Length: 154
Image 1 (cartoon, rainbow, N blue to C red):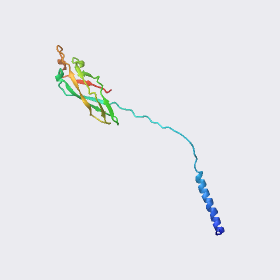
Image 2 (tube, rainbow, N blue to C red):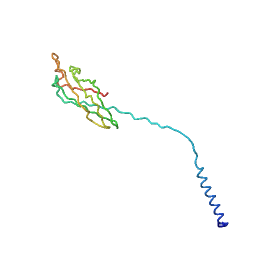
Image 3 (cartoon, rainbow, N blue to C red):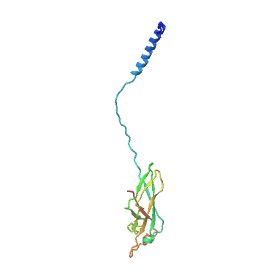
Image 4 (cartoon, one colour):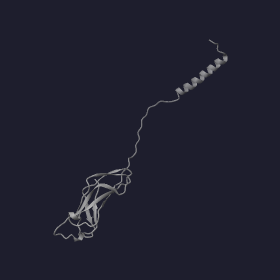
């Protein structure tokens, strides 16, 4: 084996001290601990969907004078919304002597997915608006009346 010179001994001691300082510093340069935590945020809320009942003018008494009602929806929400119409509709008119109770409006029994921010989205299916034929009852007040179908979602 070869004999170490004084210069090599100093270099070896310096290298060992450097490695010890570097390695020892890295070995103790962190702390360990435990912990836990939680996070929370409020979910968004939805806005009401607006339903439109669209039918043509010219309803007359009886089934043959019925009109098809096409329903559409406006969805102001950013996400899609399921829309099912409530069958409990009401009908009103702008003429007091033309009674809303003389009318029957139906809705489709289907559920439609209306995409977010949709305007005038067609709902699946259609309904019917019928003016009852009431023999012996003067229904002339309904001629030219404005008829409004009120519908909601369930």
